[in-house]
Length: 77
Image (cartoon, rainbow, N blue to C red; front, side):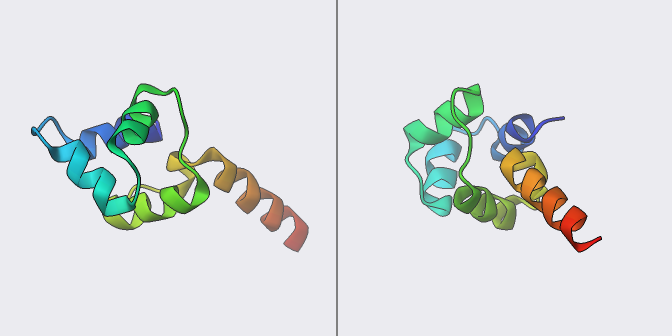
């Protein structure tokens, strides 16, 4: 399951849940809606906030972070 799906599952269908979650991570409800539709991605900063709020792995929420972590691991090896 990708980060977008995991995030949508975490937020759930409850009325007002998207607005509450968007406020919690510091983005607009419209931006969150675009993320959930797949039209936009989460910035590394928003992905970190969403990770803290949900426990969803950063790598799933923001593929850029996965690339950075992989590059850092390769450089350290």
